[in-house]
Length: 616
Ligand code: GDP
Image (tube, rainbow, N blue to C red; front, side, top):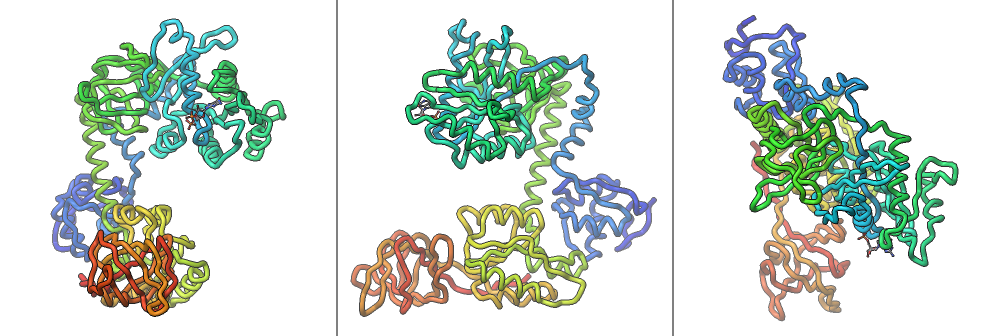
């Protein structure tokens, strides 16, 4: 149905119930595509709704919501995973349906995939090495194993030779990174704990990750060759974390090993197989196009993109057309961990693949496509989606000014805040004061998180999810957090006077933000040594780390990311014996902060000025 709309342009209208699904980061072009409209007319309609946007610009959910409502469409934003599923669906590939359709008769047992985790120096690398050397097959062939990111060994279990696959990148970083990308590769985790050291922070972190992922754990109590080893203590300690040894009536297998002397390795492998048989149903269909995950990849000068992939179902053949993340190509050659060429790789088999157009990321899923052209198209569509998603993120999620505008247009009614301060009293006081701001029932304020200390990555992540503004009171960014906030488009505002924070938030809530002053950093200096002078007070012997420090400029002192002295002035500035007006980056100088004397080595002196920010 075509009907005249705002601005006199003609746009196909929905019934009010028609749902349009848009991926995050979509533009008016994408929307126009879905409803078969002219993008230019959508620009016009949106303009009449009070919003300026180009046809190619990524818009947020709220904007699409307003536009959709006007035109009679319900808008549903889809996540990256859902979108990828839909993308594959367009090529007639439905991985979920494929798995569901597999009957018992299609499924064959497959080897378990094991990740070795534990605290640093407890012997993960050594253990992976010892396990590799027990391989009955490699032993016979005398093959030298190469590092390709994963390897498979064969071990005897109850008279039968069984394969086990090990992910050869020890440490739970790799494990979590893959899980964060939605790839669950690991079936069983070996938790290595040194018997002479005991349960350590990363031990707990590792077991938390494994338990969160629902992955069964086998504990390798390592370094039992050492005199100071106390394997019983490890069992005792781990009961606190719900890992109770079988001999204590639990169901976790603990195996004493010495990775160094290669003792107990056979029992460990046995325990892995017993745990797999008892707790898991490890089966996959080998008779279909391969699906799996990229474990590791790099660019080789001679061979191009080299990726180690783990086949999870189906069988991968030389000559197959594949897509891994946004990389695509035809499998030119495959190699196993002994550097031997292979022509087919079945489930749980890691292989190095040559022939991809670019280097995939660890954790990217791969799949075999019907032909090379389809593989390329899937990869290109994914790349376009990734780019759009990135662009959407770069746009500011919400700022206090945006909020004022959005409020005028009736698009939002809640301002979400994250509050960070130097002491808990200040945070509470600020939160109380902010929550007391009364601007009627239409708008409200919601503090989604509060805390003491510098603004962290976690704060920014939280703000990202809930489109919140971060308020920092007498604190600064933690290390590398500013870049993250920038990238994610999260607004972070710093204050050192409570009422200024309240004023800004109140103004935003009332939809009338006054001209803003913005703090512009001029220079920072690190205090190297403090000279005490009875006449001048403490003098900070400093080195200028960035910018320029000028006499008489405003200053504050930071210790460990926290503001400890504010409203200060650079009272005196000296190079050697001479008074100077400014000192540039890289030079040393003596700085006096007037009567302020609370300075010590390692403190940072920061100077700044307030500039009025042009309003747009
Ligand atoms: P990772 O950081 O967990 O990978 O630990 P490594 O495998 O690098 O081992 C750390 C140190 O412990 C190295 O010096 C190893 O030689 C030593 N180590 C590992 N396993 C054993 C063992 O079973 N017995 C003894 N005595 N030392 C071991």
